[in-house]
Length: 130
Image 1 (cartoon, rainbow, N blue to C red):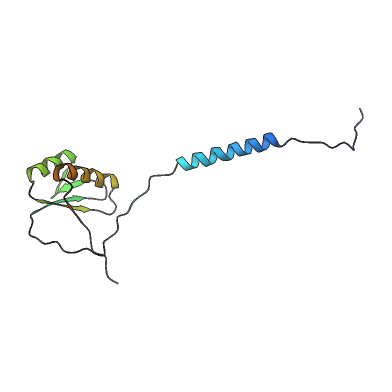
Image 2: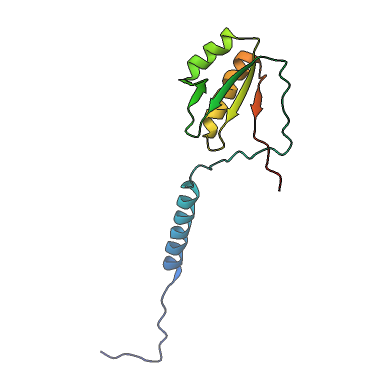
């Protein structure tokens, strides 16, 4: 067996490049779809004003865990709907914790839209002056 050292040895890199591009596309696509849901923190308002007390208010509080409270009792979405139907003349005043899940805010807004035509107030804490 005789080897010719003057002969050029060619390695075809095309399949290797194809595999690298396919892996790159795979990792780009899988990392794009695995992003977590955004956490939304509702900020304090620097233009908040004290409300006039000429309306009787129906105060609904949502805590950091997304639980809905009327007074000291915890209620669910169906009880909130019934409460809004019982007291149609009272102003719905919504107190949201800034750590509350956004989906609980959306569900309450949907109920208020159905029962009150979207008329409600969102209470915020005033931003502390420096």
